[in-house]
Length: 131
Image (cartoon, rainbow, N blue to C red; front, side, top):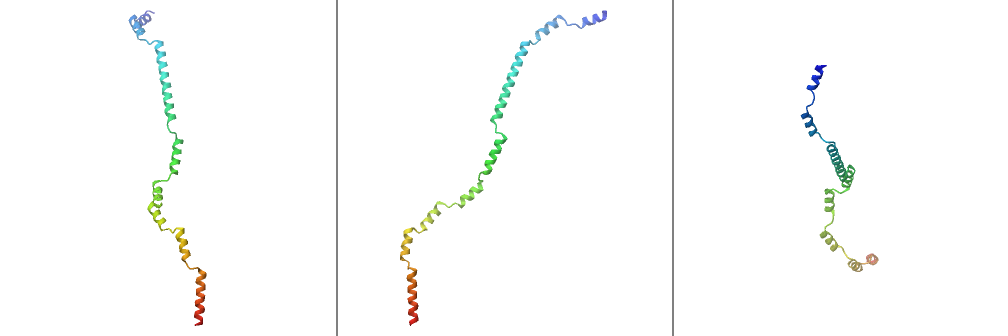
């Protein structure tokens, strides 16, 4: 019908519109290059994420660190241990007060023998009985 034909002609694209659309269209090469670039950047991002993930400490690493820290002595225990430890001066004083072997041997040779003391006591008792 004539009205359908006129309607179709009025809605057709003009030659200028067609040329403008052709000039502004993106070529398949441009799209392909953009997709390749996008894919390369995504792979770089994935590699970077993987690198960061492998360089970070894992939960297992933190658990191992916590276990090691729990086994270490805390500051109070170390301080208490150091307070109980003998210092240099007290050790030197104690060593100076300690009798050496020669001093003990000399004192023992000068000390009266128990048998000699018992003999003297027996003699004294006998003397006292006879008096």
